[in-house]
Length: 307
Image (cartoon, rainbow, N blue to C red; front, side, top):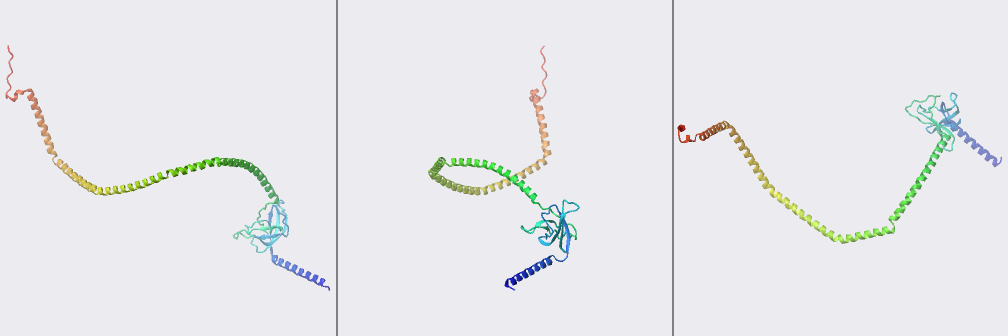
């Protein structure tokens, strides 16, 4: 046997061992009891029998059949076998997926919820439709049309904005041109000259204000001292006035008591004065009528009329 023949036999033997090992590992992974399930989709997306079934991204089984449903041909019935004890539950969702970008389509099942009830063998897994390439192309076409209109509108607005920007730049160039720069320079020179001329006056005014503030402080201190000196005599005078008012109040109270005590005597005196005044009035009237009564006791006889 030649050397080439021996090498060829050795390579074939290695490939055989490798193939046996791969088959063993696949059988060991997918071996054991499997549980059948089914699900329904409107769009299968090229899913074929033998495609992988993923539970939370983990390969747990294979797709056994992909066909139109007998009860509703508008839906695609997908049969699948998964490993026993795979925790499919009522919250699990079956949808079309991919293992990788370059791989074929696969059936992806979400993990659902731990609190949800487990699905028995042969039951239907709830499904969620995936967007088809046609739908995606239609939406992209709509987006492209809207984008073309938006681009056209933006171009029109950009033209207006660019025109306004040119006008603004022209105005800025006019404002910041050499004539205005000379005017601004002259204005600044005038301000500097005015500040230099008025600075001594400002300094003198500042000194006068400082002197005035010092005098004001001294005046305020003198006023405070005067108020402090006057305050105590004023307090004494107020205290004496308060005492005088209290004594006056007591005197008035005593006089009021005295008047109340002699009230009846005052009434008698007033009555006597009224009687005396009446008698004096009567005497005056009598004297007016009979003035001779002051000299004679008896009234003279009436004079006889001559015959």
